[in-house]
Image (tube, rainbow, N blue to C red; front, top):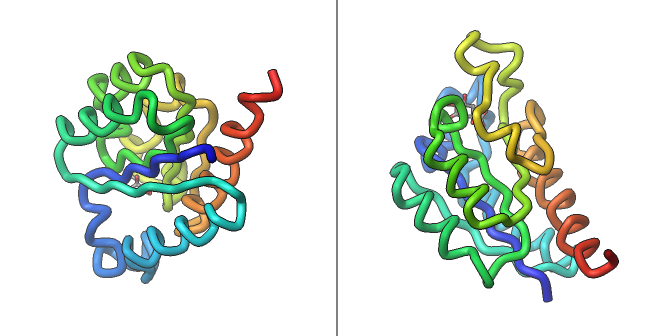
Length: 149
Ligand code: DQA
């Protein structure tokens, strides 16, 4: 069975409490539970990981080699400046879907640019918790199409 790793970056552990008018009321635990459930519906194994630390996120991306066929990542604020996370994604050569809960393009200028987007297979922004679920659907399609050439 194909396996997908879903990574969430800094401050996303506070979803539900953190600026709910922007990020909604759904907790990260609820999102993780739904991702695992949706994964079984889609026929893929799902593992979830959250860290507030850039190096830990990089380690998780490296450890995905040989274990996960696709990564879904919400890098949080690191999206806007972490060349190190971008380099980790290109280093492992695992197709990666970037997701954001909020519509970053409607927000402050510094959120409009993602250094991850050019190395992502695609990006989903602005649908709240659904951005993760849509990202998982895209990832499942990528994972299963890998076999079809
Ligand atoms: C975010 C958008 C980022 O700009 C912000 O720093 C976050 C969350 C989102 O999911 O909308 O932490 O990635």
